[in-house]
Structure formats: structure tokens, C-alpha cells
Length: 228
Ligand SMILES: O=C(CO)[C@H](O)[C@H](O)COP(=O)(O)O
Image (tube, rainbow, N blue to C red; front, side, top):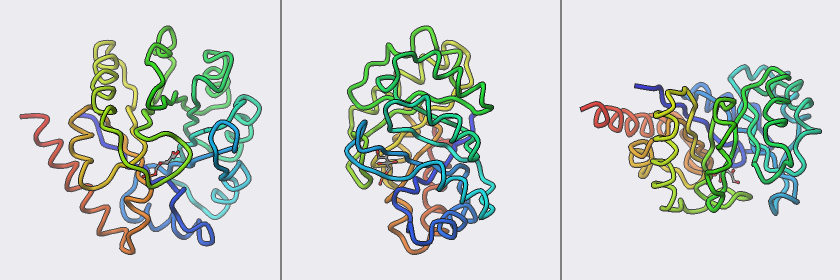
């Protein structure tokens, strides 16, 4: 059984105490830090760039950082994010004219590569490039804002992608992002996800240890059900 990766989205963290807040969710048992990059062009919101990531690395955040580029164009910022300390870089297929070239650019800069799908983006963007992917991200809300409701159509899309990954015997992380909470994470895991981006579902709580323990309990339950 594959490991479940918990990836808090720092979009909902306290930006005035970003390093501290991130360290707390790592100490509470997170696996990755999900770093949401928005440009007010590809999505109608603005967040942070490579300088913030570089500062976090200087602050001594050593956990893997998974950069989600909600920007267009993407290629010119990939070297900067890689240099700043990204481990994974994920982009949206509509945001580049050459998907394969962008994937290769990410790999050439020593990072793992991910492709992100908005709720209405068709899965045929996976054709011909599947073997190049380390991560597939399914957005379960329309990108741009935290704290939205999980779109139920994502369950079928997750099952479809899980089937594609497994039938090709590939070891690709299947990540879900948007509206993931302690009360729906088990069902999301049953549908095939093994990485969970959670923003408000973690950062709105004052005790990160407690909420992450509850989330892990749900994932343990999903794991026990999926092998019997
Ligand atoms: O990419 C995002 C929005 O574009 C966020 O990562 C996502 O919405 C997570 O936030 P929440 O868990 O609060 O829904």
C-alpha cells in the first residue's frame, strides 16, 4: 500500500509568521509543504514567488516543498523556483504551449514534475507524457482561493486517474487539492488519492497536532478498508 502524503497548503497560513507556522505543521506530522503560486492572470488572485521560498529555506525549512504554479506563462520562473529550493514543481497544461518541454525543463533543473488539472480540464492532457510525471494534481475546486467546497465530480476523476496510473504500473503521486477536510479525506483516499493538499482544514485550527492526528486517523481507517 502506498504511503499517504499530507501537504498543508500555506495559502491559509499566517503570512506574518510563515516560517514558524510551517515548522509547526511539519512538527505535527506533515510530509510536504504545498506552496501555492498565483499571478492574478492565470487565476484571479496573487500570492508569493521564489523569493519567499528562498527565505523559507534560509529559515531552515528542510521538508520537501511542492510548488504549485497557477501562473501563465510558466517556463521563465521554473529555474528560479528550482534554485530557491523546490522539490516538486507542478503546472497547468493550459498555461504552457509545450507541455513536454516544460516537464523536461523542470527535470533538467533537478525537480520532480507534476501536471495539474482544473475541475473541467480533460484528462487527455496525460496522453503521451504520462511516463514523465512524478505527480498528478486534481483540483477539487476552481483554483485561486482557499476555503472553497470540494466538488463531488472529483471522486470519479480520481478513480479514473488511479486506474490510468495503476494499469500502466507507474509510481505517480495522485494529489488532490481544494476543500479537503477531516470529514471527507477518507472517501477521497478510497477514490485513489495518496497526497492531500489541505489549507483551511488545518490552518484554521489552533492546535495543528490535534487536527493532523485526526486526519491521520481517517487515513489509517481508509488504509485498513482498502486492503481488506
Ligand atoms: O490551490 C489552492 C487554491 O487554488 C489551495 O491549495 C486550495 O484551495 C487549498 O485550500 P483549502 O484546503 O482551504 O481548500
